[in-house]
Length: 204
Image 1 (cartoon, rainbow, N blue to C red):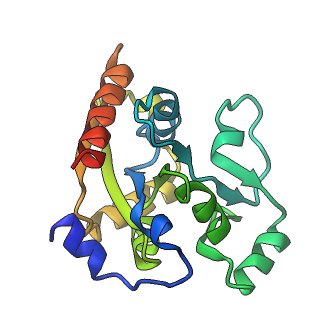
Image 2: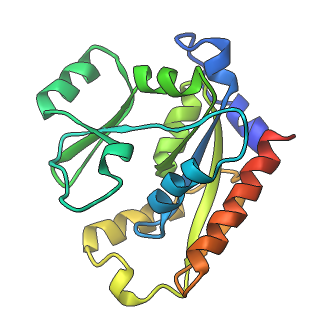
């Protein structure tokens, strides 16, 4: 199914303004540790359009990871009870639990980003469906790893099983697929290709 046709079959909510529902939300989707977050954060600095590109931050109940330069770009850290309260109040577009921690995206965050321009974030296949189901203009882009050494691949059996299960049920019509080559220069090449694919989309 084509991307526009797939999105139109999803349930549209009236909570979002026309601007929010029209501006594109680029979702980088792929297995664990293929470079989705790195590419999406770097794209913020590379974006060459006048229309802003902003990262959609995820609420997280876990603690910050020391030394991770992307933590405050990608996440908003809140106590679990606060996220649970937001869930009960109907304030969350998406909410999942993984390894004892809760991760969620709020309606307020979506509005903050998409009222002014395009949004970008790393997402799962289920996340793509949740955002489309909320009536957002989602643009899924598949990120796949190439020449990834075993030392940089996920080792957690639970995460590997989740990746495999999501891949089996993956019915999402991706706008594009970008290979992230783990050899020298591969990340820069993937970033350049991603930039072109995104520019192509917004220029349609």
